[in-house]
Length: 188
Image 1 (cartoon, rainbow, N blue to C red):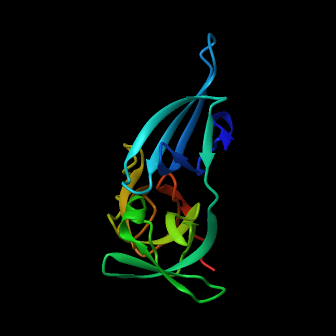
Image 2: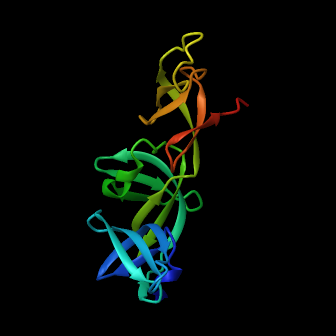
C-alpha cells in the first residue's frame, strides 16, 4: 500500500479491482482543505483512460512489476515480437499494448517492457530515437515567412515538423514523448 501523495507517473496500481498505469499526476493544494492529487489512470485490461482525484493521505495498492529492456524484432499477425538480448527469448506482445506507440516502433530498437506475473503490461519507447526522413518537400530558398518548418514522414510512418533544411534521406533525432524533432543525427 502507498499513500496517494507518493504516487508518481509510470507507477502500476490496483485501483478499484483493476490494474492501472499512472499516465499523469498533478499535485493540487486548494489552499483551503486537504491537498489532493489528480491522476490520469489507464486501465490495462480495457485501455480506457480515466481521471481520478484522491486525497494525498488516501492509501492505494501499488503493484510490483518487472521491467525488462527488450529489442523489437517484427510484427506477427496482431502481435509484435520482442527479444531479450541476454537470453534471446522471444516474447509476443499484443497490439493493444502498443496502440500509443503508433509511429514509434522501429525494428532493432530497444523498448522498456513492464511485466506483471510474467505477462507484458506496457511498452515504453526510448526517450529519443534516430529515424530516417522518407518523405518531405524540398525547401524553397527564401521561404521563411511562416514558422520555417515543414512536414516530414519518417521511416516508421510518424509525421513530424522539421526545419526547412532537412532533406529526404537524412537521419534525425526525435523526442518520443513529445513526438517532435530534436536535431539532425550525427553522420558518423
